[in-house]
Image (cartoon, rainbow, N blue to C red; front, side, top):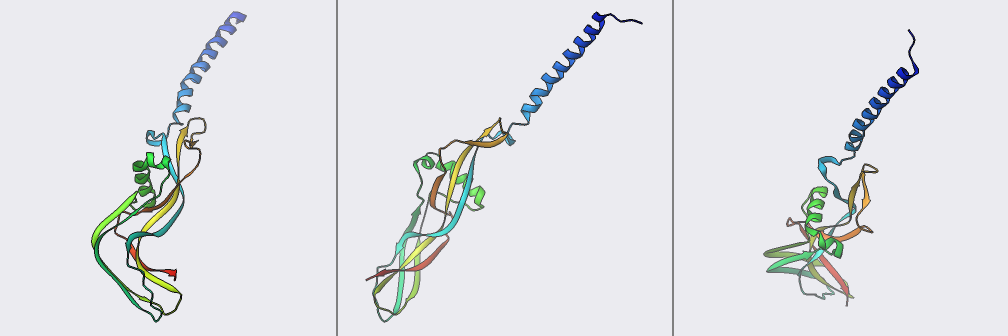
Length: 187
């Protein structure tokens, strides 16, 4: 049984159209793998996290006792402390602090305040040349944040939205987590 050249061309044409159809069906599937999880196209990444205690506005008067003694702070007042943020962070502060809280596993914010009766006593060491005061410090975080956008070309969050990492300094935790310290200053 002899087949004509035209029959072979027709068979090749059918096969070619099938391959093109398969290719067209496969293309959207390949693109679908580049959609971010939960359809989240923008995220915030955090790095260089440091925990610290940042000073509040609650402090005793300075005292100078060369022979030593003790300082007592006892007062009803509103303690407060605030984070230092860039203008870029300020514009998106609510979202950034919510995402940072999730990332750090502890609730942080732009500010913290609490009205209470504060009372603490500490011993002032002997020695001349310095004065001391009692000072309340609040648990805080310093960190860097970058807003990143999903890239379909790389299938990752590889595009930085901001030109540089933004620094947030001493973002206070929302909990009442404080310590008292003696501040020391030369006379």
